[in-house]
Image 1: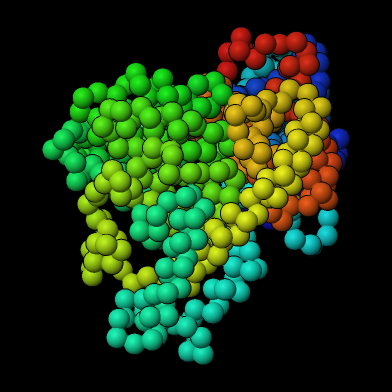
Image 2: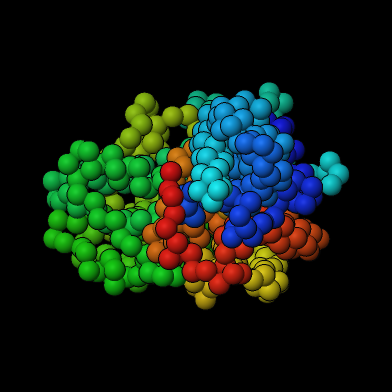
Length: 134
Length: 406
């Protein structure tokens, strides 16, 4: 496992202090919550990402995020990293986050790039879910 | 955690060289000691090396109760497997082109079989039963008139399950088929008696039994005689079956390691069994775990457990001060979960969640206690992080969910 120190630290900190790193869940039925879940247990990773938004004028801002991830160390680190990127962003800004941003920050090895792809898909799906409720 | 050495629970991958073995090996390298070439017949340097090699050969033969002349030195169990399988196939190809092996063999058996398929051989890959065992009946059902070789491992390296090689041997002998057994995981763990067990070829490794890496041996039966085509040529060493100057220090190491194994097998097994039973008892207290492989038919030094709803690589990262192996795809370069666990019929997610703990001669009670403590803690934390665990607690059947595989 040729992981960067960033992946290892992110993983370990999330494991030690789940609350601080936004592990948890919102009620998916709430009108201000959008949920995205991607991946499959058989493939070895599933990410669940939930955003809680507030409306300011005609902008929707991500106020809080919760996540849970089943997967390898880099999948867990990618989700935790993504969550930190999301808080405080508008939905339009959040849509601009690409998997390569995550891969760069965490210095993911090529074989683990799919973890960052999964993270990008989870935020897209969460935004879609939120927007469908508005 | 401090910076002390991690706890080593991966003895099935490799074992440390026993200090007593390392000491003996050092006597066969430098000018002040014995450095001769065992093939030099003209001076005492060669004679001494030859003597050391033959003594080591007798130690290996003694552990499995065969004639020392039936032992051929190789670079390891992988080479021994290759020599046995390709050696038989090439020598007896006019007799038949069918080979029987299993889906849970080591790659050192599977890959030579694949190679032979490319050269016109027909290979049957047997499925194990639920307990991870290849039964004699399974072998019986697939042998044919043109079957020349059956290659089945003795102890599976991932599960620790034991195949009944005595019964399979009766069957192959009756049918005039050669029987090869990969016994890399067996030496020093279970008793092998080749004077009664009808095995024709058996592969051994030194480094799984507290010997050095880079040396192994192939047992080739003399009565009834088994012939193989050499795979390495260049001088006709080892009765023409394996050329190349013998690595005296490595061979001496393997001999000493196997001598110690025959002396200490009982004691090693007793100690390891105690650790295994305690570990198993404690690990069973964790919710939603599955033991892979038949507990009633396995060696105690290997224990393979799936921790449902947790991915194996993340568990290994969580257990960072403990050295173990996982069947998870994420720890392999291939991105495929363990083919052994899949052959067992385990769902992919349980294969991804598996950890192999293997104990050995230098495992301590503290190692076991510390591992158990950390394990239950990390499992709990990773489940808190797992959406699958959350769904399980909510009573959702994960098999009914439509996943978005990527």
